[in-house]
Image (cartoon, rainbow, N blue to C red; front, top):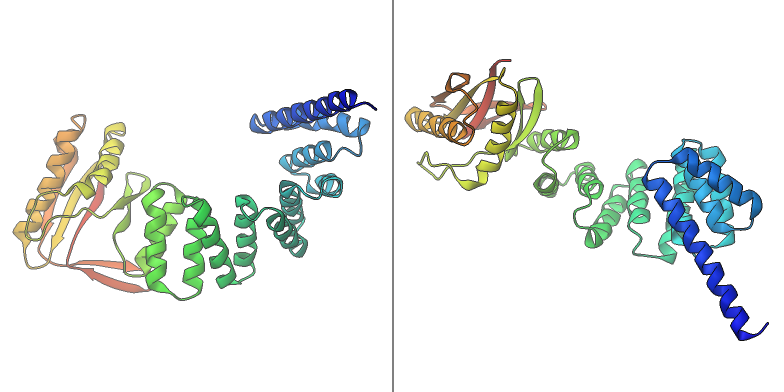
Length: 318
C-alpha cells in the first residue's frame, strides 16, 4: 500500500473512532442510556473486536444497572486496548457493582499504573481502602487526589472520616471545617457539622428553621461589642432568604454571653436588625430577639459543652 493510501486509511479510522467517542459521550451526558445501548449493541455486533465500542456498550449497561452484562464488554475493551486507563477504571466500577472488591481494587491500581494522574481511579481506590478499614491508606490516597483536585467533595469529606477512624481529632476538626468551607449546604454538610460538634468545635452548627435543618456558620462579634462582623453575614443571608420565602416561619434570635445579659441582648437585637434591614419582606412580628447572661449548654453526642458566648435560632411558629 502506498504512503498516500495508508495516510487516508489512518485518517478515516481516526475519524470514525472520534465520531464514536463523541456519540457515546453525548448519549451518556444526556442520559440516553437505552439509545446508547441500542446503538453500541449494533456496532459491537458488526465489530466485536472494537475496544471502544465494547467500552461504551459496557458503560451503557452499567448506567442501566446491568453490571453482569457490562462486565464482558469492559473486559473486552481492556483486552483490546490495555493502555487505556479509563477502560481499567470502568472495569473496576463493574467489579464493584458485582461486589468483587479484590478485582475492583486491582483495576484501579492498573488504571493508575497507566495514568497516575487519573482522578476517578485515585478517588475510587481511596474508597476501597476506606470501605475495608485501611484508614491510613485511604487518607494517603485522598491526600494524593486533593493535590490535583483540591475541591473534590468526596475526597474532602472522606478524608475527615479517615482521620476520625485514626483518632486524630485536631486534624479531623480541620478537615471537617475545610469541607464545610467549600460545601456548607446539603445532607453531607449536616453530617459534617454533627461530627465537628462532637469534637467540641462549634464554628458551624445545624439549626431547625421551620421544618428544615440548616447549616450556619458561627455569628461572631468583637470582644465586648454588639457589632456584627462580616464573617457571620453569609449565614444570616441564608437565614433571611429562608424567612423571605416562607412567611409562615416565626423565629427567635437568642444570644448568650456569660455574666453579661445586656451585651447578649444587644447582640440579639443587632442580628434581628440586620435581618429586617436586609430582607424587608420579613415582618418584624415574625422575628424576636433576646439575650441570656449565661453560658449556652449544648449536648453533642454523649458530651455536654458550655459555650461562653454564642448565637442560636429557635423556630417559635411554623
